[in-house]
Image 1 (cartoon, rainbow, N blue to C red):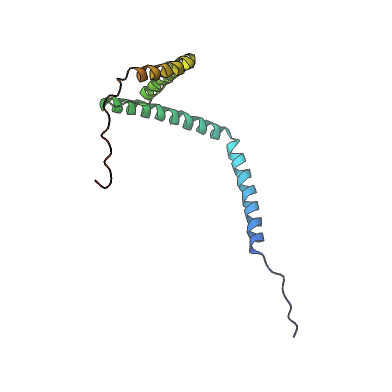
Image 2 (cartoon, rainbow, N blue to C red):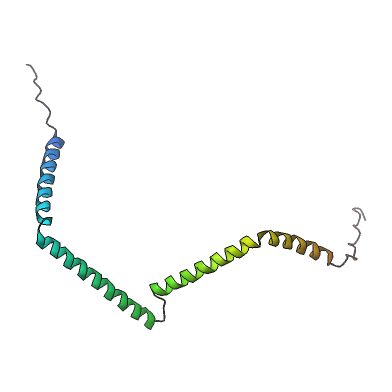
Length: 131
């Protein structure tokens, strides 16, 4: 008896072929749909609707947060701008006075060392171990 082996069937090859055909069909379908004037008009209306909803939601949330006496996004933006300006000014001040600050702190330490009163109290003498 001779064992004859049939060629192995690869299920992934059939699946890959089907997937390629389905992709080509869907691409052609959507290209046809998106090329029409109705699609363009519908997308424009959807975008307008979306922008209007976002604007309405922003106004509603702003009123709600202000009624709770909480800051909204615009308030945080204004605070961040002010904080950034303050940090830039502080950085400029530190940059201009950087060398003077180091010298000032060194002289301050020297002055603080000389202003201390002299130490007059002596510690008690150490007691011997056998006493």
